[in-house]
Length: 456
Image (cartoon, rainbow, N blue to C red; front, side, top):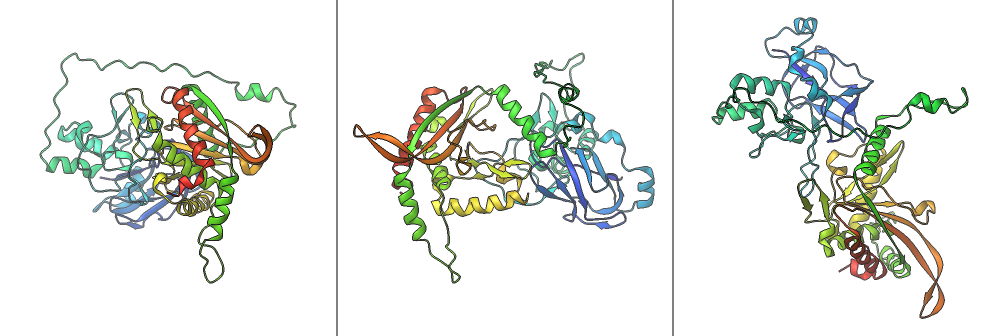
């Protein structure tokens, strides 16, 4: 039977993607592991691997196509023994295999946190060996995320697909998972009780509506503006920030931190950096590297603030994974420094330089920018004195960092000049209330003003 190749969900937030390039053409033989295409998400360009073997009979979505919904059919593979020309003429597998509601909504799998999986290219349907434990992920009620082929096989075998462990992207159930379940002696699903009705779903409250396009345009003289269409990154940023401000009760706390001791220590650390034969230092630590390490250690000292909110429980993290906002053309991305509390300043510095370079080239892997327990947004290099940042779910906090500048302060009841940096902590008040947030930012201030504590 022909095999539909679907637009994969390459991240939990992905709803649509751009099919940038086909690396196979119609008629080409395809083996498992072959790279089929390049997909542009809102954050990066990813490769899509083939899982099944056969011949690429038909390319449904041509390269260069934008905004292709997740789970839409992008190509059809002729399986072994099938005539590719016949498959191409027929259009491939029946459309009923791809549920419409699944195509509209990507898996909302939780982003990686404690341990990072080995990085590998995104796959079209089943990128990893079958999972050993745990049911398939369920989102929005009773919907289980699975490939159309997996659903069909499970239905034919009478198996409850919700009880099968998924090994696809973000826990998606794929063909090999169903076959593994069958080989393991999975029992048919029990029939639903006669007359039983599905549990009613609570309809979400409608989001506040802003001005529609035409209302905005009418406020300006025709010809006095140019329309620049939103790309997928800008749409995603707009949606997530709107969701954050509408659903998270933000609370703000600001403190001034003296930097003179930190700047002196930074100079010593950089002067001591070993150099290669060309005179290039092994590292060059920035103030932002100190900020990342200080925030990570602060979360270790105030563990109740190292959390993420869910409606049923508080997720208290065992390590400090610090996201760092990086500006890139068309928006920003937040790569995550994992276990930042355990890393040296030089390691954090080199890791961030690598992240920033690959972020601007859109080469970051999803596991490198998803998850995390907090974030840093630093606009000090632009001369911004202070600002308040918007929390990026699933974080409960974000630290906005302003410029370090000479200010007149009072020391020992007398005026003095010091280099001062203002930082503002935004907290999700459901998870980190005022007193707890104050404890966290006080710990941060103490570390920044006594930076030797970051080295021990």
